[in-house]
Image (cartoon, rainbow, N blue to C red):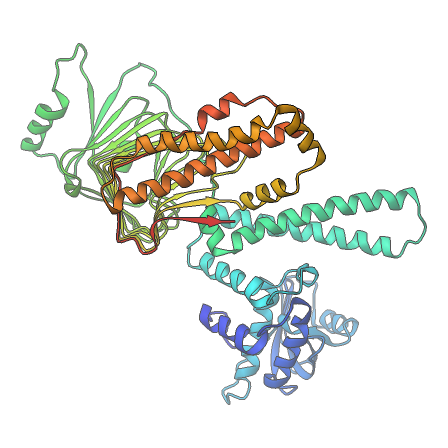
Length: 599
C-alpha cells in the first residue's frame, strides 16, 4: 500500500488550505471536498485494501460517487482476505458488500501501491479525506455558525493540536482530558440527535414530548459546555494562557516512625577532602545533642525519593543527569554545596515536568536546573510553600508555575530560556519575587485568569527584579472582558438600581471613585521615587492591577446589591491592596514592560 500516514504538518496544512477547503463554510465542506476529488482522483482502475476493525480485503474500484465520497468496488481476484475472526470468510465479505450496494466510504480504503505512478495523487487524495474525517471533522460542525472561515476556525487549530500531541508538546494529562471530553461530546451529541429525530416525527403535544424537550435542552447545554472546553484546548494561544491544571497525587510520607531526621549527601564520588569540607561547613557546624544519620547517594533523585518530613539533601558539585521527575511532598531542604554553576541537575529524556512541589515548606537553594525537550514547566508548585534561593533555572517550556492556593518565594535567582512565560501566577496564589533576573523568555511573568470570581485575588510582591530581553511583555495580565459588561450595566441601569441609589444617597457611586483614588494613592507610596524607565513600568503594572482589583470589588458589590445586600464587604476590601511593586527594572522587552490579554 502507499505509505501516506507520515505526512508533515505543513503538507496537510497546505492541502486543506490551498486545494481542498480554501475559505469554505462548515456546511460546504462536503461539496468542496467532492470538487477536489473530481480533479485528482482516478474514477476507476485502481486497487485498494478495504480496512475495518474485523478484516482486511483486497478490492478493485470500478467507479467513484464523488458527492457521497464513496467508491464503487468489487472483490479482487484472486481473493485476498485477512480476518481477525475465524468465522468471517470471503463469502461473508461478499454478502456484506451486497448489503452495502458495493459502495464503500473512501476513508475505509488504502490504495495499493503502483510503480507506474498513475495513482500517486489518488492515494494522497484518499489519505487527506481519511485524515480529515478521522481527526478534524466533528459531527456537530455543520450546525455551528457558518459566518467564519471553517479552515481558520476549526481545521487549523485541530490540525496543530494533532501534531503537537504527536510531537509530545502537550502534557499527557491534558491529552487524556481532551480525548475524554471529545468522547463525552460525541456521545451527548448522538443522544441529542436521536432525541431531536424522535421529536420531529412526533406531532402530538403530549407529556412525554414535553419531557423529551426538557431533556433535549439539558443535552444541548451540556454539549455547548463540552464544545467550549474542547475549543479552549484546541486553540494554541488559549491552551498556553490557561495551561493544564493538573492535580498532583503525590502523597507525603510524614515524619519517620522513630522521629529522626536524616541528612542525605549526594556526590558522584566521595573523596576525603570533600568529606572533611562537608563536616566542617554543613554537617558539624553546631554541637548536637543527638547524632545525625547521614546517607550517601550518587543520584539526587534517589536522595529526594528517600526523604521524609524535615530531611535535608546536600548536593555536592557535579553534573547530574536525571531521567525522572522530582516529586517533593514533604517539607525538606534541597541545597547545593557550592555555586549554582558548580551544582547542575539536568533533565534527560522527555517528561511532563521536572520538579513538582506539594510540601508545606520546601526550600531549594544554590542549584542550577537544566531542562531539555520538555512538555511542561521546570518547576510547578501545586500547594504549600516553596522557597527558591540563589538558583539558576535554564528552562525549555514554561519556567515556574504557581498554582491556586500555592505560595512561592524566589530570591536572588536567575531564570531564562522559557518558550512560554518565565513565571505563571494562578488566582488564589501568593508569589514573592525579590532580586531576581527573568530574561530571554516568551513573556517574563504571566498572571492568569486574574478576575475569576471563584478564586481569591493573588497576592504578588515584586521587589528589585530585573526583567529584560523577553520576546513579549515583561509582565502580562490575563483578564476576562468583564469591564465591557460593567460599562454596559452602568449605562443600562434599571429602575431598581436608581431607587437603590436614591435610597443610599449616591454614597456607593461616590465611594467607588474615591476608593480607586485612595488605592492608587496607597499604591503610589509603595513605588520607589522616579528613576527612569524601570519605575514607569512599575507604575503601569501597579495601576492596572489595582484598577482591576477595584473593578472586581465593584462587580461583587453590585451582585450583592441585586440580592438586597447593601453593606460593604470588609473582607474583600481588606484584600484589594495586594500588590507591592518596588524598584524593578524592565528593559529591552519586545512589546514593553506590561500588557494585557483579554479573553
